Image 1 (tube, helix red, strand yellow):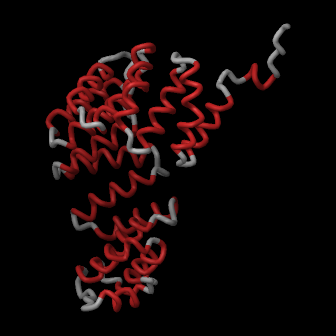
Image 2 (cartoon, rainbow, N blue to C red):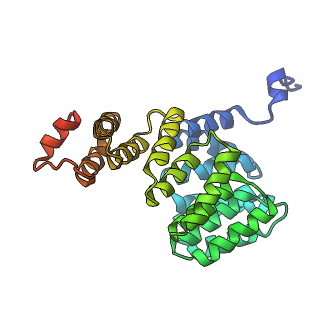
Length: 283
């Protein structure tokens, strides 16, 4: 008996429906569901690189890095795919196999054409152990290969900031802001440099712009409040801290510290009094 010919949607999409559903589950932060959907696809076709990636990501999101290594390692050997290799390195590092992770990333970053996420991951792993002298030239070499890549520029800026090289960090964050003015993280990073340099008014303007892009970002709202308090705009600063504490009650402690640390700030002997001032429900 002949097989039924595939429908038009099936012909148009080579990705199995279960795998499509698994990808959606990952996007919705449901890694257990993604694993259940993608694993049978991978089991039936060990050469399905996308299925291996989905399974690997799902296991990593569940804190099961050691289990993620095998399917990702098999997929990497079959494909020489830089995305799979980078994800494998993430799993190796999460499982405590740091040297193997670094070796894998070094091999991947040697590939051409360059794969920027591999450089970002390698620089991140190096910086975690304070190896900035290796991480900085690595990102500089990546930018020579992919000039103007905003993620690489941001990562290099953060590295300079960690080394308190604020002038270099500022220049990089300015480049990103000019190239991508709607990029929230660039605005926040540039504002942080300005705060460290005592430039509270322009930092406050950047924080306001960032909040226009992400109004529910309570962390940025706290930073705005701190800037306003430093500028002597007490009512506006306290209002910003109240708004942040209401949006994210878990950050109420930071808001209280900001109130106490500001010039002519407020200090509360009882946390309940501070919560009342911030209008936070502590129940």
